[in-house]
Image (cartoon, rainbow, N blue to C red; front, side, top):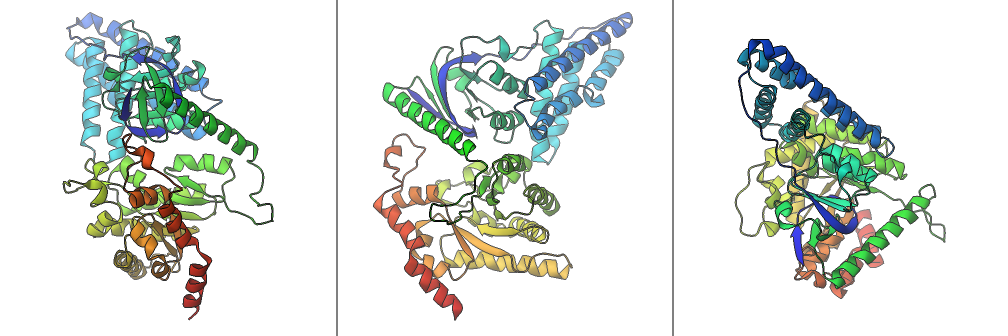
Length: 504
């Protein structure tokens, strides 16, 4: 049994026999053509482009019953690339001017466009180079007689393992009864991942070399919750995941049946149910399930998708989220990423123990200019939406007060610039460090609300990593220490003491 850790791309549990999709890059040679061959060579390129466009349109049609209009745009991006003058137009120009074969001309145009994307300071644009490469490879396969290289051709496989996959691949999985996939490359914000979530296909990406480690015929477990891939599991592990998968399936079915019902206890107490949202794409699903609002909006994915962005860009993203949330409460958590995920996007010192180092609110407080852009953007959105602000990984009162000082500075700046915001925006903290839980009575005097981050609270209280297979057995949500911390935060005595103090 081998366990690999990657990026949890799409939630769910799946298992079965795998197929290694060995999709080597099409080898392109260069040769010179005669002047009289320009038109035939250009026509050969155009026909391959037409076949590719047909294939992508068919992929979109296959998925139309499963995908929302918001996510079907991914296929439209590929279709637009096939009409792009900087790609296909440039290739036709190179055929005529350089007298070179169509394949080499297309690859040259592709490399030029990818280089432009690489030079962009926008992380989202840099990531779109994958779309260019994928669509060009499709065209080249048609030109070389390789066909569309579709997952629809794969038989007797339930899990797909590949170096990388395209959105078209993902769309074909439902039709071919593929249960899940894992890839070497990819990110949570890539189009392939977005489609996987929309279609409900469990996936793990960013595994680096799983396409080399696994072999066709291996039995694979995909854990889309923890970002784990287990190759040839033992009987005990397989039974455990079968139970976990079955329970999750039953859970989703039961929730679906209760979608239209009110959240009221037997004794008549109404309970508000809020969503956890990472990207604006997910708000449509939250609305579909009648969410009462967003209890946690994770802003770190703004930076994972776009890099360190300016205030206006952040404002526009959050404004869109507020509009998609239709006036319901929206709790926005400030940047919360560990240093092991920062180096690609932002400056960060090298650390021996990044999990305990400069991360989350500590990073924000160190880089005040970065923090101020986010605070100003959130405050500006508060003028037009029902917004709350929440700080993550607060360890004590000094840190919390530093955050509030920064927030007051942002408010002062906006006042001086005559920019509207909610002066009384509610401010809260993520209760995930035991140090803050122990002094919750004092912290309650400084904020308007708490949000308990149980996963991290359990890990830090017990000193274990739940993703580490060697110590995961120590992860006990009902451990007496954890229950004591939660009881301390929820005790009626604390609540009465807090209310009495606030009334003074």
